[in-house]
Length: 197
Image (cartoon, rainbow, N blue to C red):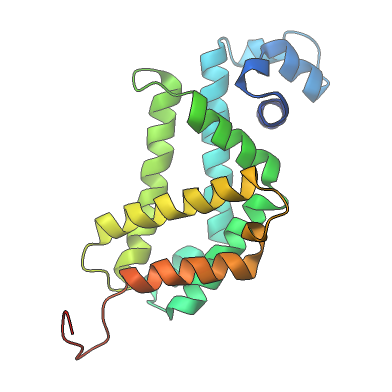
């Protein structure tokens, strides 16, 4: 099944959601016609499966970069920003196709009342929780809001990197500087600093 979902990601990245059919996935995966519809009876189930796969893989990328461990230990902002930038650079480099497919799905699918929408909400909640931990580790006064801001900013950087290929927005150093600015703003003021002064 994973091979079929990987093929579906490739179809979405290349042709958009309009191109996502069971036959297109069969052809991309080089499997007999009907294989995809055997495992995913409807297009909706196929799309929900793709969303779940992308979320799992992106969360695994965060785990491999040991970003979550960094969140818990309250490291310097620059170190967190560098790890986070490495994840985004990976999504905009080797995993660009997957990232493009995710953005296509976010922009054109997932009504609140359907299976894809529910899967998108679950995936977002998991990312927001990771970001909340980051905001809390940095000492944010409002980690929930800080987490939402971090996710929104990361999504913006990702979108910009996909729609402007070859721009410096896909460069790890550029991503790190941008992330460092936002994370610094969310971090608590240094010990002894007076609020507003």
